[in-house]
Length: 560
Image (cartoon, rainbow, N blue to C red; front, side):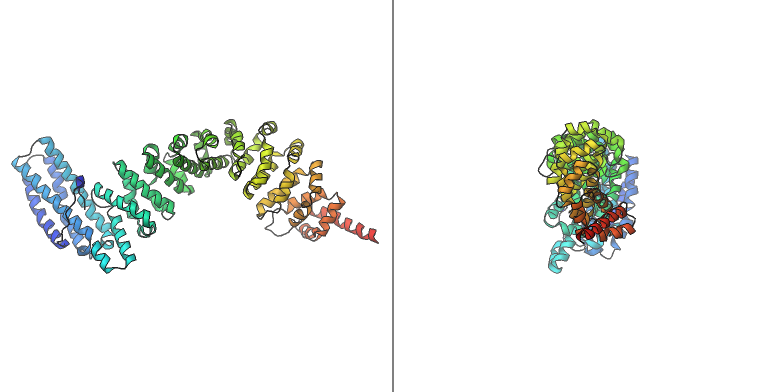
């Protein structure tokens, strides 16, 4: 046990019962001396009221079944005895009026009162938190008598208990040990961690010592990243002190606090709480000025916040658009850029005012430039998909929108390709734009996307093709592609999981003016599919079926 100023209490081999007797004997003596004091009446009245509470706390400790075995209990009794001894000495000095100065004695009495508060609190904690029943053996005994795993857990519980009991410096030492243990065996720490331990750690986030705050937030960051105690951290009030560290902590404190918030903000409820506690502004400031790791974590946190629709307007009012667009242009690491693109995608999902804000800040140009990398990101093309309906065709063409769409369809992930196809559906509001999209080389890539493994990608590819084939030259290009009819016929599957069937019918209807295409449709089994789709009242299925059956009859008669 460590007391104020970092003084160590000497290891004593006497059992807890001896220290209990010592404390019980000292209490009447110190009360008698304290009541004899005439000076500093207000301070001594308060000290006496605290001294009078000690016997009941000692009784509570001694009545616990693990009292005699608990190393922390013995240490606590040593500390109580030491405090009582100091109280006797101060009472003697006051009675004899031999103190060196009034102000000095006032300070000493205030310190004594604070120690008594701490002693009473720690005695209560030993009982209330269950620590007394957890850390029951000195380490040397535990090592000789327990299984390795049980010993480790026992030691860990005692270490965690020390975060709650004793002077701040004692907690600091326990924190140092915990940081080291978590580097080597985080799993064991998590297995014995309880609500009271979390609460103690959260309280240490507001310690006056910057070193303690740094080490505490390092531990909390590890706990948050483990994914096993987010709800406990939040319920114990971790968000406000983390936000304060993001705002005014050291470089390490800011980094660890921001990473913690990034992890915790994955929950929509916690994201709302972060906004409610004023977390947006300091996170935006980190995006503007932070180091690479902090900047990326802050951008990731803001991305998580932007996924919650009701907080998007608040983010906008704090100036998030300019910051995210600047990250796209100048972000230190790729992760920051990706988070910025995802954030813009979320912000532009539905609100037209927010879309206009992104466009006015130059977001379209920045998103298009970001797509130029070898692996164009789904988030960027997703944000563009949300925006293109609000941007004129001339502006899009001047920013080389179509070549970048082709790049995404060629080099992007399936998700990115799907977003690109969706953007085509939204941008093709005029015949001229449909023609330009076809001339840019999108059609073969969309036909290939019809083979995607995901139903949603196949659906949007078929939708884009059905939009484009209303222009004659695009329709011709689809007819010429050897894979178009086979791929589209496959999408006539009547199963509920296939949501592309109505677009496939529309596309094939446009192609059915070609005898060659009709023959291909028949040979790939379109008639069987269309009969089922006609019964399901899929638009255009009955008409296309009639065309194919007429063509099939003509073919039979011509052979005869």
